[in-house]
Image (spheres, rainbow, N blue to C red):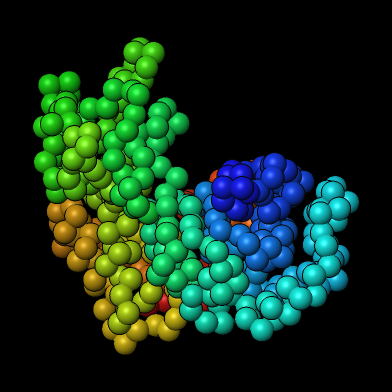
Length: 396
C-alpha cells in the first residue's frame, strides 16, 4: 500500500493496513464475507474525497464493488451522514474497531447525493474522487470481458495498471500498461513455440522469438534445480528497446479445459469464442463460464454468459458463430460435427449479477479469501451446476 504523503491508496484485496495513507481501517481486512467486505470498503472509500488509487486483485472484484455500491447507495450515504457503521452481516467481530474510524460527514453525504450512484452515468468515479488517477487490477485473459464496464465507470483518463505477470513459481514480467508486459525476472526465462513438440531441443532463447507468435515460458528458478514449463501462452508483440526482453500479452492457459471423446477444447479456444460473440449486434459479454451440456445428445460445450445491455439483433447467429470459431481453432471439431458426434455449442444468458453472486456464494461456502475468488472457465461440480441452472434467463 502507498503512503498518504505520496499517494492516497485504497485496497480491496487482502488485509488492509492501518498505516497512514489507507482509507479503510485494518479491521476491515478481517471481514471474510464477500459482500460485507466490499460494502465496508465502499463505505470508507466514499467517505474520503481525496482518494487517488484503487487496488484489486481482479477487475471483476472492482466491478462487484461498484455493483454492491449501486445496490446499497442509500444505506452507505446514510452511514456517512450519521457517522454510524451500517447493519451489515458478518462484521460483528470488527464493528467496534470500524466505528472508531467512522466520522459523521453530512457535507460529503450531500456531495455524493448530488452526484448519484455508480451506474447512473458514465465516468462516475472521477466525479466522486477528483484526484483518482489509477486503478490497479488483473484484467487480461478471461478477465478482459469485465474491462469495458470498469472503464465506463472510471472514464478514459484513469490509468489501469496491472499487478504484473507471474505464477506461484516466479515473477516473470512487469506491466507496461493494463494488458502488456515486458519480461523482467531474476530467474532464467526460456520459451517454447506452442507449435513445436515440447522437448529440450526446441527450447528458444529471448532473441529467437518472433513478434506475432505464441510461446510458453520455460523457467529455471534461482535455486537452479528445476526447469519447468509454465502452463500459460504468451503472445509476443515485440521487444523492449532498453533491455531487449520480449514484450507480450497474456493469451491464455494451454491446459485442457474440456475433453470430449472426439474433440479437445482448451481454455484459449473458449476465450476466443467469447471474444467473437462479444459484439454490439450479438451480446456484450461481461463475464462467462462454460459447462459440458448434456441436455441433449451428442453432448457439446455450453457457454453461460452474463451480459450488459440488450441482446443484439444478430443474436440468432451466435451458436453458428461459436461453432465457426471452434472449428477454426481445431480441425477436430469440424470432423466431429460432420460425423454427428458433436452438436453446435449452446449459449445461455444468466441474470445480471450472477457471477458476483457466485463469488459471494462460493467464498462464503469455502471460507476463502475474498480477493482470490474467481469464476472458473469450466464449471463441473454438481452443486455449482445446479445453482447455475437457476440463474438462466434466456437461451440463444
